[in-house]
Length: 230
Ligand code: ADP
Ligand code: ADP
Image (cartoon, rainbow, N blue to C red; front, side, top):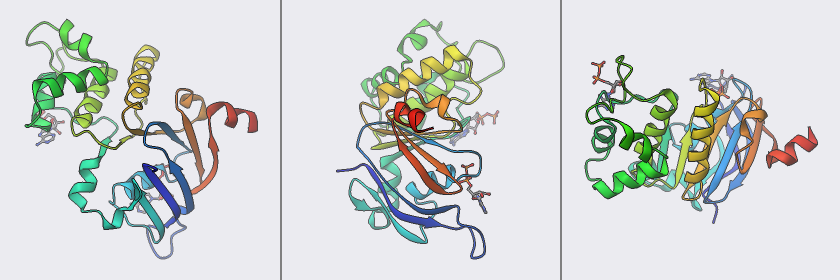
């Protein structure tokens, strides 16, 4: 089965507005990293919001593991979809506190597993006790890329079927970006990861790419395939 399918999805923000998405159809397998690429205003965020059912299509169907999402209870749907927003807010506590706060039922083993999946194990064990402050101006805390990976680890605790990453590599230095991409590729072995990018050049690590422009799906394929046809 496919993890996420769009079939003829059209959505407008108002009766008179040009649709934000028009007749979008695609099918994505249960694992791997898919990048949604398109310029600002092309409909990427709207596409994420339709998957989360923050918005409902005017036409067409969105499916999660084969089921029309309009038939899935909202709390169940949200528990199966992890969302990591740009500059996701973190608590001013320790790395572990950020994770236990988000998921009080998580065991220490669950937390270690999420940290490992987000490639944070070494980072956390390298921090002196009490200095793993995830936010804060003291300079003792995590880098921007590490904070993003912490937000990802937090989302992974719920064991989502789909992880939505909004602008995950924006304003990171190249080492942090490499570390983040490597963690994302690894997470793609356990669930479907959907990322958003503005340019094809930043999607090299993705398994497949959907190019959207003006709310329409213009192309899809691997990075190599899309570079050839460009
Ligand atoms: P992207 O994420 O690719 O930048 P969006 O999905 O945010 O694109 O936007 C797609 C289109 O929908 C744009 O024309 C944008 O102006 C419009 N749009 C987005 N959000 C709203 C909104 N809340 N109300 C009206 N129009 C919106
Ligand atoms: P401050 O005093 O600077 O607001 P807080 O400890 O209240 O510090 O919040 C730190 C961060 O944690 C903020 O970015 C905030 O958005 C986030 N935060 C605080 N409370 C919650 C909550 N209940 N759920 C999710 N995030 C929260």
